[in-house]
Length: 157
Image 1 (tube, rainbow, N blue to C red):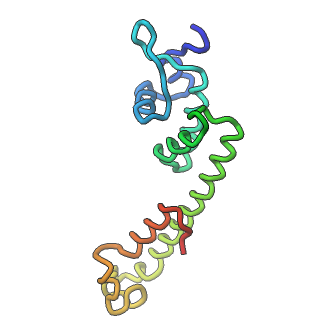
Image 2: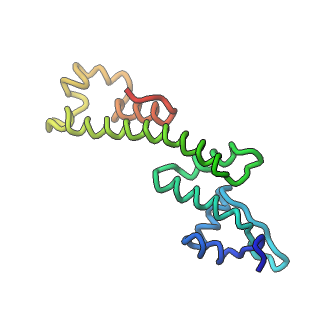
Image 3: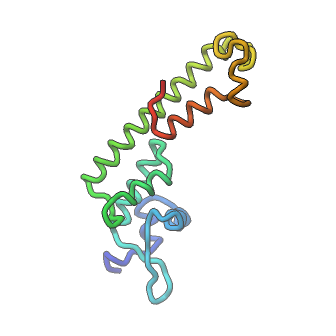
């Protein structure tokens, strides 16, 4: 077996993932393979680095779609180099900081007004005096709007 002709089983074993995971990553456009004369999937060894990036990103909460967009930002959709990784991780660090701030704010809401026991966003005298939030819609409007801002890359209040 040549180095540029890795089987799906060999890649899966080397990466510590299931074959079905490789198929899934390929379906999502995160990795690519080709078919040999026997119609079997084959991979170049560089796929190991792409999978390592995927696994590292997932461990810290980066979605597969975000990983895909990061890969697409690389010239010729190449496998990330060490320099590429530094840039990707810096961008993800900023995004994760915003998510962490958002989650801390959610945690504080739980121990703040909602934690008082009234469990009412309609009658809450601190977050919604005189039900002025009704004009913005039903449900957890404060939290929904905050989440939309974080996902859009804005800094939480």
